[in-house]
Length: 424
Image (cartoon, rainbow, N blue to C red; front, side):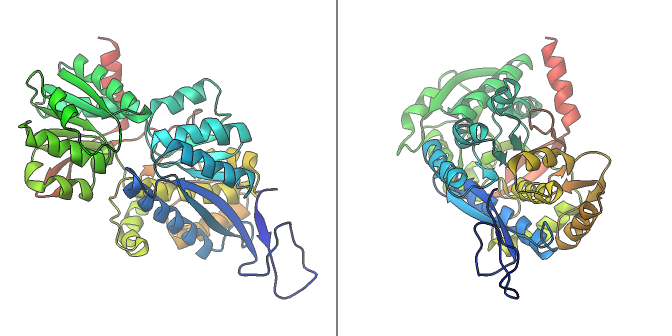
């Protein structure tokens, strides 16, 4: 049985399982977190970790799962590196015996954890923010064992949304610089295919390797062909270095940015005055009561992190779905939790929202054998056979140093564009 610790202070002969402790709560169920707390994606992982902790706090304060068990996290830093993530996930699965791992944030962390650890061990893995189409392909090829889920839409859709947004802004001639990992390569591929079919021209495509002190060579290479601007697929730290190199070499101060570049650190590092023509796309939300709750409470809980921080909203949903699935499963076995995850968001259940009071209602319904449908911070979602969700995309622009939402493309809108492009 996976890690589940029972204690009682009232009766020495009370029922106990392996791993009993004489401390704290009557029962603890540990979920592993492998998140990017440091490295290029550190800002995302720190926000995500706080979100999961908040979701678990809310469920615990609602009464906990399995008649009072508390959900606790064992959080490990992947350092934004796949090999480090694999080592940490292996420890969590083999030593701590966790039934679920939440993570990673970036695809280059989530994919090796999935292929090297969770899929082979039969342990559930839920990523809040890994958007690579490779994850769908692995599921389609039967290499995940059905163990993988994510609360973000695939880049196969985001690339299409970004291409349409660029064309709609009159950006018909762009240079492309992308991080040279699974996420960056796939994002560039999906964007390029859609953008060119929509009539856009990519003047150059330049991959880059992470953590370089200078990206002057990459910026210079991307200047060829007289682009109108730069589509930068990156993370805040390296992305800021690249953007500064682009600007210093006289590149047009017009940018298209991926979801992870929605970052105050990026804006401050580059300088707001250089980003007045910066546009971006992110996985969007369909606002619910959960959205209102999260935006009203997350900043205080997290110690000052904005609720709009990349990965924050969907990490809360990942934690909430995992916690409710553990309750629904009535077990700490991975197989039971895996089966319960789609059930707690399935159509036909009683709508449930974020927060202590709503989770108390959910736990009561589950105990009575009734179906629930968690409608999260990012909106109502469901999982397909590959663990994917579909959802809208937020269209944003940087104005006076702030990220401002200017529109949204619904999931249906994006699919309509894809279908149109498929016929060309």
